[in-house]
Length: 336
Image (cartoon, rainbow, N blue to C red; front, side):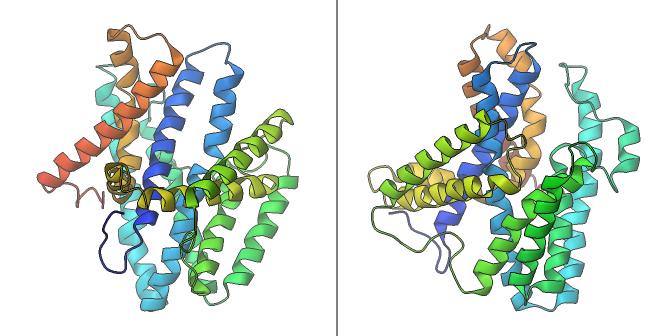
């Protein structure tokens, strides 16, 4: 079993580490999808099964720790802190994506170039992965109003999720859809914290067996929904599927903590989890170099491209983060 600071649940860091690897794999996979005229069904299903669970992990944990923060300080102080911890990095990274994207275009092809005009619309149209910070800000503002009544907050988020499910696709802005469908996970986390329950699961016997069961169920349910052409991987009717995946990853995190023969896996994932925000923000820049790298290596195999892209995206982002930490730039860029 790996050691941890007193009071810290290392399984939370581990599940964050797993989720951030899935984020990078998901974007590497979408790069492969965009590069092909005819997209194999296997890549489409991989996209579906990844996106149905990886961001719900982060939103659930965000909701959980939002309650803990609100329980320690007044609502006004918490709200003011959101401008430093959410709004400021959102603005800073909007500019960084634009500037670095233009600089990198001289080295390699950039699939999604950020135009200068897009900087004028970040108030209602987030750039790239920054939709997470945008949606999180409004969820946390909702929590400020209802953190003492998380059941009501969850009920309202589920009602909105169901209403959006009935709306034809393309009518609502993408950020509204993304925020509404992810909100139930945030408020589930809020409710768990209010009830004094652990963020993931309490210690259980044979977590590895439970992890295998839940994850097999998750993949089978996801496949059934994919074959039924359910559409978006995160939506109201996908909630049971996502919850089975969340339970599976939670059990897996517990199981990894209890593996004395392979402690480096748990500790490595925990380190990635602790740096998950930095990796999340940096991996888009690192992944832009992958197509040129694969071309130089003459890699045409999709599985190899996904493996290389994920490893390079995760490791490259983490190493870049450590370098920025060493030169004391990470704090300015709000990477921690």
